[in-house]
Amino acid sequence: MKTHKTRLASLLLMGAACFLCLIPANAGAASNQIDMQIDDQPGYTPSADEENLVGPYERQIVFFRTTEKPGTIVVHTADRYLYLVQPDNRAIRYGIGVGRDGFQWAGVKSIIRKQEWPDWRPPPEMIQRQPYLPRFMAGGPGNPMGARALYIGGTVYRIHGTNQPQTIGHAVSSGCFRLVNGDVIDLYGRVPVGTKIVVKQAADPE
Amino acid sequence: MRSSGFLRISAAFSAIFLAAGLGGCNSAQQADPGAIGVPSLPSTISADSLVGKWGVAAYHRDSDRPRTEGEARRQCSNPYVITKGPNGGVMMHLADQSKPQELVMKASAGGVNYLGPAGSAATPDDREIVAISDNTFTVKWVSPDNSNRYGTMVYIRCP
Image (cartoon, rainbow over all chains, first blue to last red; front, side):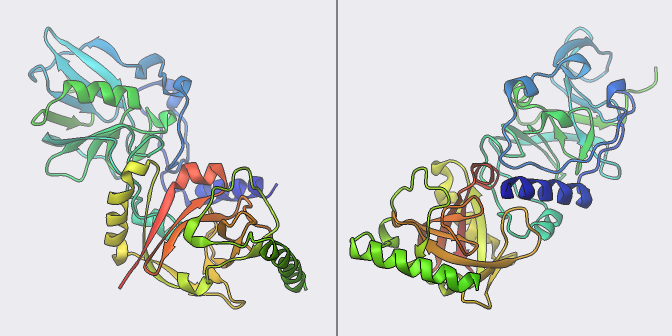
């Protein structure tokens, strides 16, 4: 009973704090045209079913016209897609979570570091609200940073995994791009340090 | 009222178990399998030893413990502050609570020390003291849910 109350209080606190508010996706999938409120869930380990994306955000080969060379990462934040350019006008497309309103960005950068099971440091706002939280949590299953991280040079942003598959397709982060763990492991294996990454709001008009 | 009742019960259990040679011993903690909400005994650890400023970090895998300790040491710019409580305990937060409350040190018959609200030991709100010395202590949440979320937490005393 007490545990139930504690969890309820936790959920109310999370909702009231609205630390990571979501905004509607505008192009990815009609089903995501909803508002959500969600906070990081350290320690939560999603089931295999939860991590198994279906529909537009499922990892897939797509037709993709671009002048970028194969091997380049292209992110369309408005669409919630990350593309890894392949030869012959193709790309591997991954569903992603992106920065919430006011935290989105654009630019041409490169991957400068890769890390398996990255560590997590709760943001200051979260520490202020939950002072008992550890200021550092070693990487591992259940870590909000997920299974892999690709560090984007010249920024504080990363492409990383997540233990919250339900956030894929939404604007939830502070500017990082998150993939389900299976996808970030796949991308991590395909992308070397030095890879060019192009971040833009949407595809260029034809 | 409740407090004095608790003390009487604690004293009674303490006498029984000390007489039986089963008193708590924080230097050699034993696992307390399945102990949930057991009668508590006085802890061998003084709550005063927790008062101070602490760098806090956490891990889930034992292999991460050494570097987690190093990270805890580096968190003293944003320490967790534990103050003395009005009734001899310490003021700390329970999981998912925004306000601190007075917690006490208590022990189970198996000699395991816990930090939590006054009353039974090894309740879901409690943290098990896994290790403690003058300048560091390590806790693990009794609640599996809390333990999954927050891991094993290492506190390193800040200068």
